[in-house]
Length: 133
Image 1: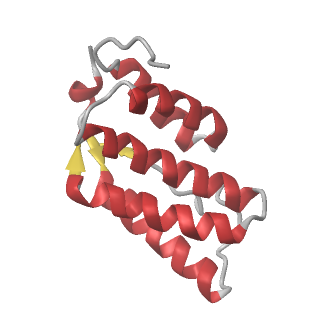
Image 2 (image 1 turned 60 degrees about the vertical axis):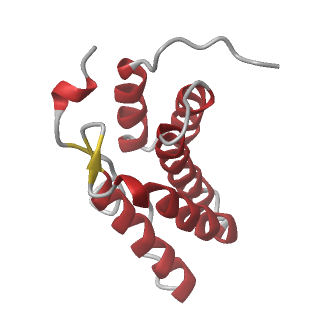
Image 3 (image 1 turned 120 degrees about the horizontal axis):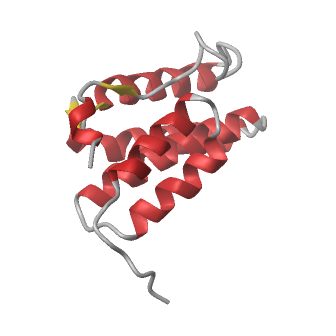
């Protein structure tokens, strides 16, 4: 089954960032999935990478550390071609924070809850004009 797709909606990307940054990882997943399914390579991997980091954080919050470690690593890997920034987002920071949390979880030195801040991994918007329609 194919999903009817229009051009990527920058409002959806902005909503994704807001959901991610507020710890609404499940909602972020749903919003990103719409973008991901409608996009072509290589942009599809950008959305898939953010989605996997979000799901990794969701798993961490659900105490599924194995799933969190796996998805934080794979999400960070998918972001690598877009570093340090793409689509107005600081992906270098997201990448590094995801890997730092993965490392902490693997070593058993969990820094605490992923939300609320300051221990919250977040996506920093570095160019608002890119996210405007």
